View 1 (cartoon, one colour):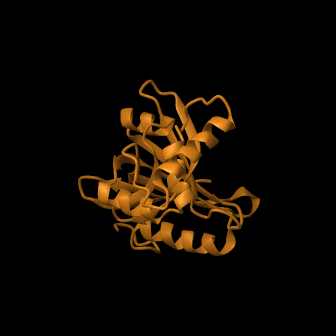
View 2 (cartoon, helix red, strand yellow):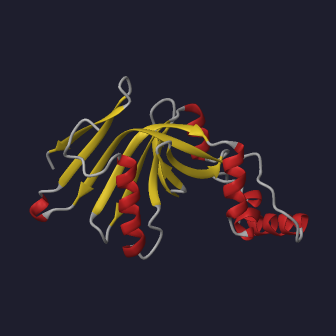
Length: 200
């Protein structure tokens, strides 16, 4: 790290430290983050997903690849994430490009999910219209019967993405709206994080 003001070795360390604090303070889903994507012609969309891994390789989340977000990321891999923890009065913004996780990673995470969630991944045609809830419930019953008491394998259309960050912003609330904003920007040539502080 080029700037000695940094209190963490890498921005990933800071994300994980703040996540650990949020796990103790947030009543629901401390790993929830807003995922912003865009179509090739620039129309944005945003929704909540759950962080399933954060290390020096990036931030990982999973989805149906045939969903709206999956389709948009396939066409335009640039994305942004936002964590907001109301109890801590903190947020983190992350920007970068995504790449698919490996099949082995996707298989391992899928196998760790509750059985009902794995059945749901088969039953849900995510982001597409349905006639009514009965249609979805019928698909759940169909796949519950199909797999019986046996293993529920991962569908080919269900996997994950790893966002490879090139920018982080760590925001802390301060009195009188004199907030703290610290950024890390990746110098790709030097493979080093450049630290800066922004006016609130």
